[in-house]
View 1 (cartoon, rainbow, N blue to C red):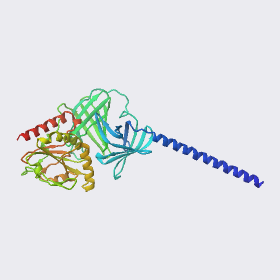
View 2 (view 1 turned 45 degrees about the vertical axis):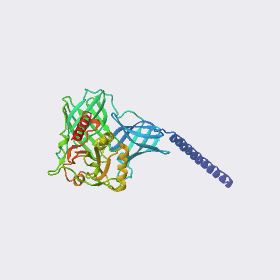
View 3 (view 1 turned 180 degrees about the vertical axis):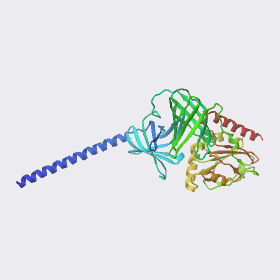
View 4 (view 1 turned 60 degrees about the vertical axis):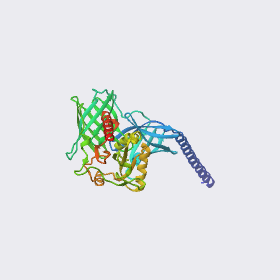
Length: 424
Protein backbone atom coordinates (compact mmCIF):
# COMPACT_ATOMS: atom_id res chain seq x y z
CA UNK A 1 0.00 0.00 0.00
CA UNK A 2 1.19 3.51 -0.83
CA UNK A 3 2.58 5.07 2.37
CA UNK A 4 2.10 8.57 0.99
CA UNK A 5 -1.58 7.78 0.39
CA UNK A 6 -2.01 6.53 3.95
CA UNK A 7 -0.38 9.61 5.42
CA UNK A 8 -2.49 11.89 3.28
CA UNK A 9 -5.67 10.06 4.30
CA UNK A 10 -4.75 10.16 7.99
CA UNK A 11 -4.04 13.86 7.79
CA UNK A 12 -7.38 14.47 6.10
CA UNK A 13 -9.24 12.52 8.78
CA UNK A 14 -7.37 14.34 11.53
CA UNK A 15 -8.15 17.69 9.92
CA UNK A 16 -11.81 16.71 9.59
CA UNK A 17 -12.02 15.71 13.27
CA UNK A 18 -10.28 18.89 14.35
CA UNK A 19 -12.64 20.93 12.20
CA UNK A 20 -15.68 19.17 13.72
CA UNK A 21 -14.34 19.74 17.21
CA UNK A 22 -13.70 23.40 16.45
CA UNK A 23 -17.21 23.76 15.10
CA UNK A 24 -18.64 22.12 18.26
CA UNK A 25 -16.61 24.44 20.50
CA UNK A 26 -17.67 27.42 18.42
CA UNK A 27 -21.33 26.40 18.64
CA UNK A 28 -21.03 25.88 22.38
CA UNK A 29 -19.35 29.27 22.84
CA UNK A 30 -22.07 30.90 20.79
CA UNK A 31 -24.72 29.21 22.95
CA UNK A 32 -22.93 30.31 26.13
CA UNK A 33 -22.75 33.88 24.86
CA UNK A 34 -26.41 33.77 23.87
CA UNK A 35 -27.34 32.50 27.35
CA UNK A 36 -25.17 35.16 28.98
CA UNK A 37 -26.83 37.84 26.88
CA UNK A 38 -30.25 36.48 27.79
CA UNK A 39 -29.41 36.38 31.50
CA UNK A 40 -27.98 39.89 31.42
CA UNK A 41 -31.26 41.02 29.93
CA UNK A 42 -33.27 39.22 32.66
CA UNK A 43 -35.64 41.49 34.58
CA UNK A 44 -36.88 40.13 37.90
CA UNK A 45 -39.62 42.72 38.30
CA UNK A 46 -43.14 41.35 38.25
CA UNK A 47 -45.45 38.78 39.80
CA UNK A 48 -44.28 35.26 40.58
CA UNK A 49 -45.77 31.97 41.73
CA UNK A 50 -43.44 30.03 43.99
CA UNK A 51 -43.55 26.37 44.99
CA UNK A 52 -41.98 25.19 48.24
CA UNK A 53 -41.11 21.52 47.80
CA UNK A 54 -41.45 20.58 51.45
CA UNK A 55 -41.20 16.83 50.95
CA UNK A 56 -42.22 14.12 48.50
CA UNK A 57 -45.82 14.73 47.50
CA UNK A 58 -46.13 18.05 49.32
CA UNK A 59 -45.67 21.18 47.22
CA UNK A 60 -46.90 24.39 48.85
CA UNK A 61 -47.69 27.29 46.48
CA UNK A 62 -47.24 30.93 47.37
CA UNK A 63 -47.08 34.28 45.60
CA UNK A 64 -44.56 37.08 45.60
CA UNK A 65 -43.77 40.16 43.60
CA UNK A 66 -40.57 42.08 42.95
CA UNK A 67 -40.80 45.85 42.68
CA UNK A 68 -38.24 48.60 42.20
CA UNK A 69 -38.10 51.89 44.07
CA UNK A 70 -35.27 54.42 44.23
CA UNK A 71 -33.03 52.07 42.27
CA UNK A 72 -33.50 49.15 44.68
CA UNK A 73 -35.44 45.98 44.02
CA UNK A 74 -37.48 44.45 46.85
CA UNK A 75 -39.43 41.22 47.18
CA UNK A 76 -42.88 41.23 48.77
CA UNK A 77 -44.78 38.09 49.77
CA UNK A 78 -48.49 38.24 48.93
CA UNK A 79 -51.02 36.51 51.17
CA UNK A 80 -54.67 37.56 50.90
CA UNK A 81 -54.76 41.35 51.45
CA UNK A 82 -51.22 41.53 52.84
CA UNK A 83 -48.03 42.49 51.05
CA UNK A 84 -45.25 41.45 53.44
CA UNK A 85 -41.83 42.94 52.77
CA UNK A 86 -39.31 40.14 52.34
CA UNK A 87 -36.08 41.93 51.58
CA UNK A 88 -33.72 43.46 49.03
CA UNK A 89 -33.10 41.57 45.80
CA UNK A 90 -29.54 41.20 44.55
CA UNK A 91 -28.96 39.95 40.99
CA UNK A 92 -25.69 38.55 39.66
CA UNK A 93 -24.94 37.23 36.18
CA UNK A 94 -27.03 34.08 36.62
CA UNK A 95 -28.59 34.27 40.09
CA UNK A 96 -30.98 36.11 42.41
CA UNK A 97 -30.45 36.44 46.16
CA UNK A 98 -32.98 37.80 48.64
CA UNK A 99 -31.96 38.35 52.26
CA UNK A 100 -35.02 37.60 54.42
CA UNK A 101 -33.53 39.32 57.45
CA UNK A 102 -36.73 39.11 59.50
CA UNK A 103 -36.21 35.36 59.89
CA UNK A 104 -32.45 35.19 59.28
CA UNK A 105 -33.18 33.31 56.05
CA UNK A 106 -32.21 33.74 52.41
CA UNK A 107 -33.74 32.85 49.06
CA UNK A 108 -31.08 31.82 46.54
CA UNK A 109 -32.28 31.35 42.96
CA UNK A 110 -30.56 30.30 39.76
CA UNK A 111 -31.99 31.96 36.64
CA UNK A 112 -33.30 29.08 34.54
CA UNK A 113 -34.69 31.38 31.86
CA UNK A 114 -36.63 34.62 31.69
CA UNK A 115 -39.72 33.11 33.31
CA UNK A 116 -38.39 30.44 35.66
CA UNK A 117 -36.25 30.34 38.80
CA UNK A 118 -34.88 27.37 40.70
CA UNK A 119 -33.23 27.50 44.11
CA UNK A 120 -33.53 27.12 47.86
CA UNK A 121 -34.70 28.72 51.07
CA UNK A 122 -31.80 28.48 53.51
CA UNK A 123 -30.43 29.99 56.69
CA UNK A 124 -28.12 32.93 56.11
CA UNK A 125 -25.32 31.09 57.92
CA UNK A 126 -26.01 28.05 55.67
CA UNK A 127 -26.85 25.90 58.73
CA UNK A 128 -29.49 23.18 58.51
CA UNK A 129 -31.12 21.59 55.49
CA UNK A 130 -32.26 23.98 52.72
CA UNK A 131 -35.78 23.83 51.30
CA UNK A 132 -36.14 23.55 47.52
CA UNK A 133 -38.02 26.46 45.95
CA UNK A 134 -38.97 26.95 42.31
CA UNK A 135 -40.83 29.89 40.78
CA UNK A 136 -42.44 30.95 37.51
CA UNK A 137 -44.08 34.11 36.23
CA UNK A 138 -47.68 33.31 37.16
CA UNK A 139 -50.34 35.25 39.05
CA UNK A 140 -52.49 32.41 40.39
CA UNK A 141 -51.82 30.40 43.57
CA UNK A 142 -53.45 26.97 43.36
CA UNK A 143 -54.00 24.84 40.26
CA UNK A 144 -57.79 24.57 39.96
CA UNK A 145 -60.44 22.72 37.99
CA UNK A 146 -62.68 25.82 37.80
CA UNK A 147 -65.31 23.89 39.72
CA UNK A 148 -67.90 26.20 41.33
CA UNK A 149 -68.21 26.20 45.12
CA UNK A 150 -71.33 24.39 46.31
CA UNK A 151 -72.10 27.10 48.88
CA UNK A 152 -70.72 30.20 50.58
CA UNK A 153 -68.71 28.90 53.54
CA UNK A 154 -67.79 32.30 54.95
CA UNK A 155 -68.04 32.71 58.72
CA UNK A 156 -66.51 31.72 62.03
CA UNK A 157 -66.06 28.15 63.23
CA UNK A 158 -65.18 26.43 66.48
CA UNK A 159 -62.16 24.39 65.35
CA UNK A 160 -60.30 21.70 67.27
CA UNK A 161 -56.79 20.62 66.23
CA UNK A 162 -56.31 16.99 67.18
CA UNK A 163 -53.25 15.83 69.10
CA UNK A 164 -52.02 12.22 69.45
CA UNK A 165 -51.33 12.82 73.17
CA UNK A 166 -54.95 13.77 73.76
CA UNK A 167 -54.25 17.47 74.37
CA UNK A 168 -56.49 18.79 71.64
CA UNK A 169 -56.27 22.53 70.92
CA UNK A 170 -59.38 24.66 70.64
CA UNK A 171 -59.14 27.42 68.04
CA UNK A 172 -61.38 29.70 66.00
CA UNK A 173 -61.44 29.41 62.22
CA UNK A 174 -62.31 32.57 60.31
CA UNK A 175 -63.13 32.29 56.60
CA UNK A 176 -64.16 34.75 53.90
CA UNK A 177 -65.24 33.45 50.50
CA UNK A 178 -65.71 35.36 47.25
CA UNK A 179 -66.62 33.03 44.42
CA UNK A 180 -63.91 30.37 44.41
CA UNK A 181 -61.44 32.52 46.32
CA UNK A 182 -61.06 31.73 50.02
CA UNK A 183 -59.10 33.65 52.64
CA UNK A 184 -58.93 33.13 56.37
CA UNK A 185 -56.96 32.40 59.49
CA UNK A 186 -57.01 30.23 62.59
CA UNK A 187 -57.03 32.11 65.88
CA UNK A 188 -55.25 30.24 68.68
CA UNK A 189 -54.57 31.04 72.31
CA UNK A 190 -50.95 31.66 71.33
CA UNK A 191 -51.75 33.86 68.32
CA UNK A 192 -53.18 33.49 64.84
CA UNK A 193 -52.09 31.79 61.61
CA UNK A 194 -51.84 35.22 59.98
CA UNK A 195 -53.09 35.67 56.40
CA UNK A 196 -54.08 32.47 54.60
CA UNK A 197 -55.14 32.47 50.95
CA UNK A 198 -56.52 29.80 48.69
CA UNK A 199 -59.51 28.35 46.90
CA UNK A 200 -62.67 26.35 47.49
CA UNK A 201 -63.93 24.05 44.74
CA UNK A 202 -67.15 22.18 45.31
CA UNK A 203 -66.89 21.80 49.08
CA UNK A 204 -63.11 21.21 49.24
CA UNK A 205 -60.69 23.94 50.24
CA UNK A 206 -56.96 24.65 50.15
CA UNK A 207 -55.14 27.48 51.93
CA UNK A 208 -51.48 28.45 52.14
CA UNK A 209 -49.22 31.15 53.50
CA UNK A 210 -45.54 32.07 53.30
CA UNK A 211 -43.65 35.16 54.47
CA UNK A 212 -40.10 33.80 54.49
CA UNK A 213 -40.12 31.63 57.59
CA UNK A 214 -41.89 28.29 57.13
CA UNK A 215 -44.61 27.67 54.52
CA UNK A 216 -48.04 26.62 55.79
CA UNK A 217 -50.65 24.52 53.98
CA UNK A 218 -54.18 23.63 55.05
CA UNK A 219 -56.69 21.49 53.19
CA UNK A 220 -60.12 20.21 54.08
CA UNK A 221 -63.79 19.78 53.33
CA UNK A 222 -66.86 21.78 54.29
CA UNK A 223 -69.95 19.68 55.04
CA UNK A 224 -73.59 20.65 54.34
CA UNK A 225 -74.40 20.48 58.07
CA UNK A 226 -72.01 23.36 58.88
CA UNK A 227 -69.08 21.21 59.97
CA UNK A 228 -65.63 20.89 58.44
CA UNK A 229 -62.75 18.46 58.52
CA UNK A 230 -59.17 18.97 57.42
CA UNK A 231 -55.48 18.84 58.16
CA UNK A 232 -52.46 21.09 58.25
CA UNK A 233 -49.41 19.68 56.43
CA UNK A 234 -45.76 20.57 56.77
CA UNK A 235 -42.21 19.26 56.99
CA UNK A 236 -42.83 17.92 60.50
CA UNK A 237 -45.90 15.91 59.58
CA UNK A 238 -49.62 16.53 59.64
CA UNK A 239 -52.30 17.45 62.16
CA UNK A 240 -56.01 16.84 61.68
CA UNK A 241 -58.73 19.28 62.67
CA UNK A 242 -62.51 19.40 62.84
CA UNK A 243 -64.87 22.34 63.17
CA UNK A 244 -68.44 23.51 63.52
CA UNK A 245 -69.84 26.79 62.22
CA UNK A 246 -70.62 29.18 65.08
CA UNK A 247 -71.10 32.92 64.68
CA UNK A 248 -70.14 33.36 68.34
CA UNK A 249 -66.97 31.24 68.19
CA UNK A 250 -64.41 32.54 70.68
CA UNK A 251 -61.30 31.55 72.65
CA UNK A 252 -60.76 31.60 76.41
CA UNK A 253 -60.21 35.06 77.89
CA UNK A 254 -56.59 35.98 76.93
CA UNK A 255 -56.33 38.12 80.08
CA UNK A 256 -56.78 35.10 82.36
CA UNK A 257 -54.27 32.65 80.91
CA UNK A 258 -50.96 34.05 82.18
CA UNK A 259 -50.73 35.56 85.65
CA UNK A 260 -48.45 36.29 88.59
CA UNK A 261 -47.68 33.71 91.23
CA UNK A 262 -49.23 34.17 94.63
CA UNK A 263 -47.46 36.85 96.66
CA UNK A 264 -46.11 38.79 93.66
CA UNK A 265 -47.32 42.19 92.49
CA UNK A 266 -44.71 43.01 89.86
CA UNK A 267 -41.73 41.70 87.89
CA UNK A 268 -38.12 42.17 88.89
CA UNK A 269 -35.47 41.88 86.19
CA UNK A 270 -32.26 43.42 84.91
CA UNK A 271 -31.43 42.57 81.31
CA UNK A 272 -28.84 44.08 78.92
CA UNK A 273 -29.61 45.96 75.74
CA UNK A 274 -27.56 45.28 72.59
CA UNK A 275 -24.77 47.50 73.91
CA UNK A 276 -24.58 45.71 77.25
CA UNK A 277 -26.36 48.40 79.30
CA UNK A 278 -28.55 46.85 82.00
CA UNK A 279 -32.19 47.92 82.03
CA UNK A 280 -34.62 47.41 84.90
CA UNK A 281 -38.12 48.49 85.86
CA UNK A 282 -36.48 50.18 88.84
CA UNK A 283 -34.65 52.65 86.58
CA UNK A 284 -35.58 56.31 87.02
CA UNK A 285 -36.88 56.39 83.43
CA UNK A 286 -39.84 54.19 84.33
CA UNK A 287 -40.86 55.63 87.70
CA UNK A 288 -44.42 57.00 87.91
CA UNK A 289 -45.14 55.89 84.37
CA UNK A 290 -47.33 53.25 82.80
CA UNK A 291 -44.92 50.64 81.41
CA UNK A 292 -45.72 48.05 78.75
CA UNK A 293 -43.60 44.91 78.66
CA UNK A 294 -43.74 42.83 75.53
CA UNK A 295 -42.24 39.34 75.62
CA UNK A 296 -41.13 38.95 72.03
CA UNK A 297 -38.61 37.61 69.52
CA UNK A 298 -37.49 38.69 66.06
CA UNK A 299 -38.13 35.14 64.77
CA UNK A 300 -41.82 35.15 65.78
CA UNK A 301 -44.45 35.97 63.08
CA UNK A 302 -47.08 37.04 65.64
CA UNK A 303 -44.45 39.26 67.30
CA UNK A 304 -44.01 40.91 63.91
CA UNK A 305 -47.70 41.78 63.95
CA UNK A 306 -47.45 43.10 67.49
CA UNK A 307 -44.44 45.29 66.64
CA UNK A 308 -46.28 46.59 63.57
CA UNK A 309 -48.99 47.83 65.94
CA UNK A 310 -47.07 48.90 69.02
CA UNK A 311 -44.07 50.71 67.46
CA UNK A 312 -46.16 53.46 65.82
CA UNK A 313 -48.50 53.45 68.83
CA UNK A 314 -45.55 54.34 71.08
CA UNK A 315 -44.48 57.21 68.83
CA UNK A 316 -48.00 58.65 69.09
CA UNK A 317 -48.35 58.15 72.86
CA UNK A 318 -44.89 58.37 74.47
CA UNK A 319 -45.42 61.96 75.63
CA UNK A 320 -48.41 60.86 77.70
CA UNK A 321 -46.24 59.18 80.35
CA UNK A 322 -45.97 55.72 78.78
CA UNK A 323 -42.86 53.60 78.25
CA UNK A 324 -42.27 50.22 76.60
CA UNK A 325 -39.59 47.58 77.17
CA UNK A 326 -39.33 44.74 74.65
CA UNK A 327 -37.96 41.61 76.32
CA UNK A 328 -36.34 39.68 73.47
CA UNK A 329 -35.89 35.91 73.58
CA UNK A 330 -33.81 35.03 70.53
CA UNK A 331 -32.47 31.87 68.90
CA UNK A 332 -29.04 32.67 70.34
CA UNK A 333 -27.76 34.97 73.06
CA UNK A 334 -24.34 35.22 71.42
CA UNK A 335 -23.73 39.01 71.50
CA UNK A 336 -22.95 39.53 67.82
CA UNK A 337 -25.95 37.51 66.67
CA UNK A 338 -28.35 39.10 69.17
CA UNK A 339 -27.23 42.60 68.22
CA UNK A 340 -27.71 41.80 64.53
CA UNK A 341 -31.28 40.46 64.77
CA UNK A 342 -32.48 42.95 67.38
CA UNK A 343 -31.08 45.91 65.44
CA UNK A 344 -32.77 44.64 62.29
CA UNK A 345 -36.04 44.39 64.22
CA UNK A 346 -35.65 47.94 65.52
CA UNK A 347 -34.89 49.36 62.09
CA UNK A 348 -37.65 47.48 60.29
CA UNK A 349 -40.43 48.71 62.58
CA UNK A 350 -38.96 52.06 63.57
CA UNK A 351 -38.83 51.07 67.24
CA UNK A 352 -38.01 53.93 69.61
CA UNK A 353 -38.52 52.13 72.92
CA UNK A 354 -35.98 50.01 74.81
CA UNK A 355 -35.11 46.47 73.77
CA UNK A 356 -33.29 44.03 76.04
CA UNK A 357 -31.93 40.54 75.53
CA UNK A 358 -33.68 38.36 78.10
CA UNK A 359 -32.66 34.86 76.96
CA UNK A 360 -33.11 32.18 74.33
CA UNK A 361 -36.40 31.50 72.53
CA UNK A 362 -37.78 28.92 74.93
CA UNK A 363 -40.86 29.08 77.16
CA UNK A 364 -38.97 27.45 80.02
CA UNK A 365 -36.27 30.11 79.74
CA UNK A 366 -38.95 32.80 80.01
CA UNK A 367 -40.34 31.18 83.15
CA UNK A 368 -36.85 30.94 84.67
CA UNK A 369 -35.85 34.51 83.81
CA UNK A 370 -39.18 35.93 85.05
CA UNK A 371 -39.90 33.72 88.09
CA UNK A 372 -42.88 35.81 89.19
CA UNK A 373 -44.82 34.69 86.09
CA UNK A 374 -47.05 31.65 86.22
CA UNK A 375 -48.22 29.65 83.19
CA UNK A 376 -46.25 31.39 80.44
CA UNK A 377 -47.80 30.17 77.19
CA UNK A 378 -47.01 32.36 74.23
CA UNK A 379 -44.73 34.67 72.27
CA UNK A 380 -45.78 37.43 72.31
CA UNK A 381 -47.25 38.16 75.73
CA UNK A 382 -48.02 41.75 76.70
CA UNK A 383 -47.80 42.92 80.32
CA UNK A 384 -49.01 46.35 81.45
CA UNK A 385 -47.51 47.88 84.62
CA UNK A 386 -49.32 50.71 86.40
CA UNK A 387 -47.70 53.93 87.67
CA UNK A 388 -47.15 52.36 91.07
CA UNK A 389 -45.05 49.60 89.50
CA UNK A 390 -47.62 46.81 89.86
CA UNK A 391 -48.86 44.47 87.13
CA UNK A 392 -52.29 45.65 86.01
CA UNK A 393 -52.91 43.34 83.06
CA UNK A 394 -51.37 40.40 81.16
CA UNK A 395 -52.50 39.52 77.64
CA UNK A 396 -51.45 36.14 76.21
CA UNK A 397 -50.79 35.98 72.47
CA UNK A 398 -51.63 38.62 69.90
CA UNK A 399 -54.67 38.88 67.66
CA UNK A 400 -53.17 40.25 64.46
CA UNK A 401 -54.97 42.20 61.71
CA UNK A 402 -55.80 38.96 59.87
CA UNK A 403 -58.32 38.21 62.66
CA UNK A 404 -60.52 41.18 61.80
CA UNK A 405 -62.92 41.96 64.66
CA UNK A 406 -60.67 40.20 67.19
CA UNK A 407 -57.82 42.56 66.31
CA UNK A 408 -60.15 45.56 66.52
CA UNK A 409 -61.37 44.42 69.95
CA UNK A 410 -57.80 44.04 71.20
CA UNK A 411 -56.82 47.54 70.06
CA UNK A 412 -59.90 49.03 71.73
CA UNK A 413 -59.28 47.16 75.00
CA UNK A 414 -55.57 48.01 74.98
CA UNK A 415 -56.18 51.72 74.53
CA UNK A 416 -58.94 51.66 77.13
CA UNK A 417 -56.66 50.07 79.73
CA UNK A 418 -53.83 52.54 79.06
CA UNK A 419 -56.20 55.52 79.22
CA UNK A 420 -57.61 54.26 82.52
CA UNK A 421 -54.17 53.73 84.11
CA UNK A 422 -52.89 57.14 83.01
CA UNK A 423 -55.77 58.83 84.85
CA UNK A 424 -54.92 57.17 88.17
